[in-house]
Amino acid sequence: MGEPVRVAFLGGLGEIGRNCALIEQSGRIVVLDCGVLFPNAEMPGVDLVLPDLSYLAERRGDIDGIVLSHGHEDHIGAIGYLLREVDAPVYGSAFTLSLARNHLDEASISSAGLVAVKDGERRTIGPFDVEFIPVTHSVPNGFATAFHTAQGVVLHSGDFKLDLTPVDGRRTDLARIGEIASTTGVRLLLSDSTNAEEPGYTGSERSVGESLRRIFESHPDRRIIAACFASHVHRIQQLADAAVASGRRIALIGRSMLKNVSLAREQGLLRVPDPSIVESESLDRLDPGELCILSTGSQGEPMSALALMASGESRYLEITDGDVVVLSSHAIPGNEWAVAKVMDGLARRGAEVIHAAVAHVHESGHGRQGELATLLSIARPDCFVPVHGEYRHLLRHSRLAIEMGVAPSKALLCEDGDAIALTDGGIDFDGEVPASYVFVDGIAGDIGTGVLRDRRVLAEEGVVVVVVTVDRRSGELLARPEVVSRGFLDAAGQEDLTAEARSAVEKAIEVAIGEGHTEPDALRRVVRRTIGRLVNERTRRRPMIVPVLVEA
Image (cartoon, rainbow, N blue to C red; front, top):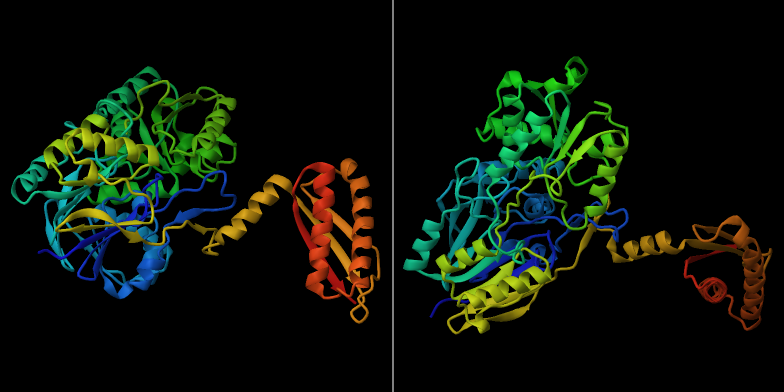
């Protein structure tokens, strides 16, 4: 009889981002990834959304290690927040750990133990024998991880695709996965679901390189500005190759682009001749046809290099007629509006904008249905849980697994907060863990759902402030109430309503005082209720109402 193995999901199931899970056996825990979710328009002022790490903080003494599958922000972006709470070694490829180190430096964490592992390496982490299996993705040196447990192998696919001609020659190691399936067997497969709705197979990254070369060749005398993820070293390599082949020099703009290119070159993951790179301050000295600019901002981030170019605020260059801007990415769900705004700004300044809808300048790093089915057929898992995707992606992937032979009772559809248990008797749900959103605004940390709710009300309905001055001893009104609003009605529309509101508050306060309700909290409730009823009747709107009681 084997020890039960528990898997719990703190994020990443039902959303694209916040990927974080834990695997537990004999009371010991290994954490798998700790990423962020980028905010959407319904989260005003929020910079990042984190997993709820409270459960891991409570169990900090039980955590033997943290495994990072690859270096994307939705998998490593919250590692600094986790290591403030937990003291445990972090395992990953050298490049992944280099990217993670940036987050640790920002969090002023210098004592973390970072353990670099290589393709095919096995490490004992707590009660688990953890095997790091190479997979192809849109960032170098990603891993699938095989946890050899008391209940058999728990295989996490990582983010992956099956690219037979990857830029770096590093293919997903299906042979090793097949070997595990044939020897020990795969008890549970946790598999990337991002493209589970997409039929067929994801194209090779090399096909993007061919398209990029054609774009450079067809615009010989025009300046080319290309934006992509700074972590997509394979895309940067192909952009650099196309630039060098067309006789161009390369300038890097954007902090993360500069940092990641430097890291990738140091580790031999990116090959760009030194003479081909020029400083951004030298841009004015080169003719347009001699220059290629690699920039951050492909997701329309407000203060990114590309967004500043689109708004005319870049200190490095000004977009002019004849410039060619290549957006070599797809918008992350939720970023579509921001990306469209940047493209529109570039077009207004005269640039020709080339994006994935008009040219083959992007391929996904996630496998489609054909690749997901291939992994299922090779791994032949006894049990299956789809991970990494919105709910509809998880649902489609679960159905695909059943079509591929997984028993319906062993294909569990989980969401954030769910925990499952592998036992000798099978697989089943096993309670819940905290998995709420944690909102980060600047350095203030978690701002809470109440603050976010107030921000939405302020943005949508405005605020009405009512100032009431009363005698501290008698509770009587000393002056007429003052009513001030912002973001509610314009000056012409609010004059009559303000006068009516003053009278209504004055009467309501006098009635309350006459009935002996002179406590400050009671008077504030009277003001809020009176103004709320009046405003709703007159405008059918519900602004935030802030009663201010001044005692003199």
